[in-house]
Length: 187
Image 1 (tube, rainbow, N blue to C red):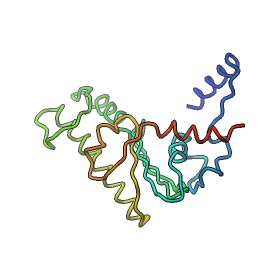
Image 2 (image 1 turned 45 degrees about the horizontal axis):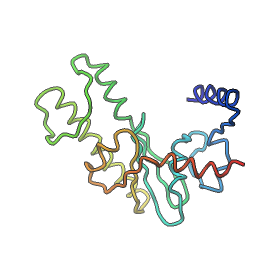
Image 3 (image 1 turned 90 degrees about the vertical axis):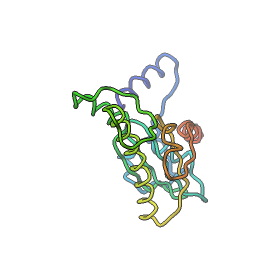
Image 4 (image 1 turned 180 degrees about the horizontal axis):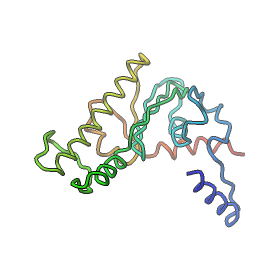
Protein backbone atom coordinates (compact mmCIF):
# COMPACT_ATOMS: atom_id res chain seq x y z
CA UNK A 1 0.00 0.00 0.00
CA UNK A 2 2.75 2.59 0.65
CA UNK A 3 3.66 2.58 -3.06
CA UNK A 4 0.02 3.11 -4.06
CA UNK A 5 -0.36 5.89 -1.49
CA UNK A 6 2.71 7.69 -2.85
CA UNK A 7 1.47 7.43 -6.46
CA UNK A 8 -1.97 8.78 -5.50
CA UNK A 9 -0.45 11.50 -3.29
CA UNK A 10 1.83 12.65 -6.12
CA UNK A 11 -1.03 12.67 -8.64
CA UNK A 12 -3.38 14.64 -6.37
CA UNK A 13 -0.76 17.20 -5.41
CA UNK A 14 0.34 17.83 -9.00
CA UNK A 15 -2.92 17.57 -10.96
CA UNK A 16 -5.47 18.84 -8.45
CA UNK A 17 -3.22 20.76 -6.04
CA UNK A 18 -4.68 18.75 -3.18
CA UNK A 19 -2.54 17.84 -0.19
CA UNK A 20 -2.74 14.25 1.06
CA UNK A 21 -1.95 13.13 4.58
CA UNK A 22 -1.07 9.70 5.91
CA UNK A 23 -3.25 9.11 8.98
CA UNK A 24 -0.33 7.98 11.13
CA UNK A 25 1.71 11.09 10.27
CA UNK A 26 -0.90 13.23 12.03
CA UNK A 27 -0.90 13.84 15.77
CA UNK A 28 -3.69 11.45 16.80
CA UNK A 29 -3.07 11.82 20.56
CA UNK A 30 -5.98 14.23 20.99
CA UNK A 31 -8.33 11.61 19.51
CA UNK A 32 -7.09 8.30 20.92
CA UNK A 33 -4.57 6.79 23.32
CA UNK A 34 -2.61 3.96 21.70
CA UNK A 35 -1.16 1.15 23.83
CA UNK A 36 -0.09 -1.02 20.88
CA UNK A 37 3.11 -0.62 18.84
CA UNK A 38 2.27 2.51 16.87
CA UNK A 39 4.61 1.67 13.98
CA UNK A 40 2.93 -1.67 13.41
CA UNK A 41 -0.76 -0.78 13.68
CA UNK A 42 -2.42 -0.11 10.33
CA UNK A 43 -3.92 3.31 9.64
CA UNK A 44 -7.19 1.61 8.70
CA UNK A 45 -7.41 -0.04 12.12
CA UNK A 46 -6.64 3.19 13.98
CA UNK A 47 -9.14 5.08 11.82
CA UNK A 48 -11.88 2.57 12.66
CA UNK A 49 -11.05 2.83 16.36
CA UNK A 50 -11.05 6.64 16.27
CA UNK A 51 -14.54 6.62 14.77
CA UNK A 52 -15.86 4.95 17.95
CA UNK A 53 -13.77 6.47 20.75
CA UNK A 54 -15.64 7.79 23.74
CA UNK A 55 -15.23 7.67 27.51
CA UNK A 56 -18.15 5.30 28.11
CA UNK A 57 -17.97 2.20 25.93
CA UNK A 58 -15.57 -0.59 25.09
CA UNK A 59 -15.59 -1.93 21.55
CA UNK A 60 -14.32 -4.86 19.56
CA UNK A 61 -14.14 -3.89 15.90
CA UNK A 62 -14.29 -6.90 13.61
CA UNK A 63 -13.24 -6.04 10.06
CA UNK A 64 -13.58 -8.55 7.23
CA UNK A 65 -10.89 -7.20 4.91
CA UNK A 66 -7.86 -8.82 3.32
CA UNK A 67 -7.24 -10.07 6.84
CA UNK A 68 -9.97 -10.64 9.41
CA UNK A 69 -9.01 -8.23 12.17
CA UNK A 70 -10.28 -7.70 15.70
CA UNK A 71 -9.39 -4.38 17.32
CA UNK A 72 -9.88 -3.79 21.02
CA UNK A 73 -10.91 -0.32 22.09
CA UNK A 74 -11.32 0.27 25.82
CA UNK A 75 -13.03 3.65 26.20
CA UNK A 76 -10.62 5.97 24.34
CA UNK A 77 -7.62 3.61 24.38
CA UNK A 78 -6.65 1.39 21.47
CA UNK A 79 -5.31 -1.69 23.26
CA UNK A 80 -4.28 -3.83 20.27
CA UNK A 81 -5.90 -6.62 18.39
CA UNK A 82 -5.87 -9.89 16.53
CA UNK A 83 -5.12 -10.58 12.88
CA UNK A 84 -6.54 -13.78 11.37
CA UNK A 85 -6.41 -14.84 7.72
CA UNK A 86 -9.00 -13.11 5.58
CA UNK A 87 -11.95 -15.16 4.37
CA UNK A 88 -11.52 -14.39 0.64
CA UNK A 89 -7.74 -14.79 0.78
CA UNK A 90 -8.04 -18.16 2.52
CA UNK A 91 -10.74 -19.36 0.14
CA UNK A 92 -8.68 -18.36 -2.92
CA UNK A 93 -5.53 -19.92 -1.51
CA UNK A 94 -7.33 -23.19 -0.88
CA UNK A 95 -8.67 -23.40 -4.43
CA UNK A 96 -5.28 -22.32 -5.87
CA UNK A 97 -3.33 -24.95 -3.92
CA UNK A 98 -5.79 -27.85 -3.93
CA UNK A 99 -6.39 -28.78 -7.54
CA UNK A 100 -9.68 -30.59 -6.87
CA UNK A 101 -11.28 -27.63 -5.09
CA UNK A 102 -12.87 -25.16 -7.51
CA UNK A 103 -13.22 -21.40 -6.98
CA UNK A 104 -16.49 -20.88 -5.12
CA UNK A 105 -18.57 -18.07 -3.72
CA UNK A 106 -19.03 -18.26 0.01
CA UNK A 107 -22.66 -18.46 1.11
CA UNK A 108 -24.48 -19.06 4.35
CA UNK A 109 -25.11 -22.77 4.77
CA UNK A 110 -27.60 -24.50 7.04
CA UNK A 111 -25.98 -27.92 7.24
CA UNK A 112 -22.59 -28.46 8.80
CA UNK A 113 -21.87 -31.69 6.94
CA UNK A 114 -21.37 -31.13 3.22
CA UNK A 115 -22.39 -33.79 0.71
CA UNK A 116 -20.08 -32.65 -2.10
CA UNK A 117 -16.86 -30.64 -2.40
CA UNK A 118 -18.53 -27.25 -2.77
CA UNK A 119 -20.93 -27.68 0.17
CA UNK A 120 -18.08 -29.11 2.29
CA UNK A 121 -15.83 -26.12 1.56
CA UNK A 122 -18.68 -23.66 2.14
CA UNK A 123 -19.45 -25.33 5.46
CA UNK A 124 -15.82 -25.34 6.54
CA UNK A 125 -15.40 -21.66 5.81
CA UNK A 126 -18.79 -20.49 7.01
CA UNK A 127 -18.94 -22.45 10.27
CA UNK A 128 -15.17 -22.29 10.74
CA UNK A 129 -15.11 -18.49 10.61
CA UNK A 130 -18.29 -18.21 12.70
CA UNK A 131 -16.55 -20.30 15.37
CA UNK A 132 -13.32 -18.33 15.06
CA UNK A 133 -15.22 -15.06 15.52
CA UNK A 134 -17.17 -16.17 18.60
CA UNK A 135 -14.10 -17.81 20.14
CA UNK A 136 -11.81 -14.80 19.71
CA UNK A 137 -14.44 -12.39 21.06
CA UNK A 138 -14.94 -14.62 24.12
CA UNK A 139 -11.17 -14.84 24.66
CA UNK A 140 -10.87 -11.03 24.50
CA UNK A 141 -13.65 -10.69 27.11
CA UNK A 142 -12.00 -13.29 29.32
CA UNK A 143 -8.53 -11.72 29.07
CA UNK A 144 -9.71 -8.14 29.68
CA UNK A 145 -12.53 -8.99 32.11
CA UNK A 146 -14.62 -6.35 30.37
CA UNK A 147 -17.80 -6.24 28.34
CA UNK A 148 -17.79 -4.91 24.80
CA UNK A 149 -20.03 -3.69 22.05
CA UNK A 150 -19.02 -5.56 18.89
CA UNK A 151 -19.01 -3.66 15.61
CA UNK A 152 -18.56 -5.54 12.34
CA UNK A 153 -17.60 -4.09 8.98
CA UNK A 154 -15.95 -5.06 5.71
CA UNK A 155 -16.54 -7.48 2.87
CA UNK A 156 -18.06 -10.52 4.55
CA UNK A 157 -19.76 -8.68 7.44
CA UNK A 158 -23.18 -9.11 5.80
CA UNK A 159 -22.68 -12.87 5.66
CA UNK A 160 -21.73 -13.25 9.32
CA UNK A 161 -23.73 -10.50 11.08
CA UNK A 162 -26.67 -12.80 11.90
CA UNK A 163 -24.78 -16.10 11.91
CA UNK A 164 -22.64 -15.84 15.01
CA UNK A 165 -23.66 -16.19 18.65
CA UNK A 166 -22.26 -12.79 19.60
CA UNK A 167 -24.63 -9.82 19.28
CA UNK A 168 -23.11 -7.37 16.82
CA UNK A 169 -23.82 -3.99 15.28
CA UNK A 170 -23.11 -3.68 11.57
CA UNK A 171 -21.41 -0.45 10.47
CA UNK A 172 -20.21 -0.12 6.88
CA UNK A 173 -19.28 3.56 7.38
CA UNK A 174 -16.87 3.17 10.28
CA UNK A 175 -13.73 4.03 8.27
CA UNK A 176 -15.31 7.10 6.66
CA UNK A 177 -16.59 8.25 10.07
CA UNK A 178 -13.06 7.91 11.47
CA UNK A 179 -11.56 9.82 8.56
CA UNK A 180 -14.05 12.65 9.12
CA UNK A 181 -13.00 12.88 12.79
CA UNK A 182 -9.32 12.77 11.81
CA UNK A 183 -9.75 15.40 9.08
CA UNK A 184 -10.58 17.95 11.77
CA UNK A 185 -6.91 17.73 12.90
CA UNK A 186 -5.76 19.12 9.53
CA UNK A 187 -5.53 22.87 9.37
